[in-house]
Length: 74
Image: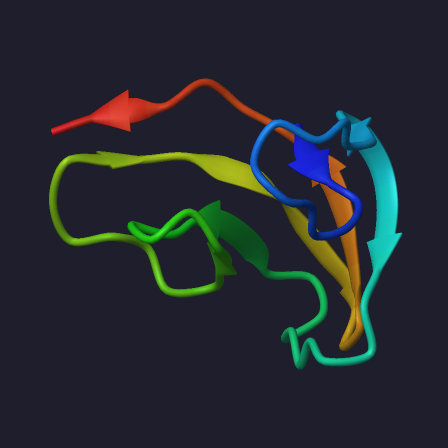
């Protein structure tokens, strides 16, 4: 899932596993997949090593539809 806000170590966080997530700081290309980045942040650039994991698709420039798929290892 994706945390719905920042938290300090050991604090309780809200986690969303599916559905739309909006953030004004995003600039997605709508209709394209969003991947789990190597630093743990979402990205539209697939990683070049390790594994690829689609976490959803961009619905709008500021909205990700979260739908986590199984990782593909290479």
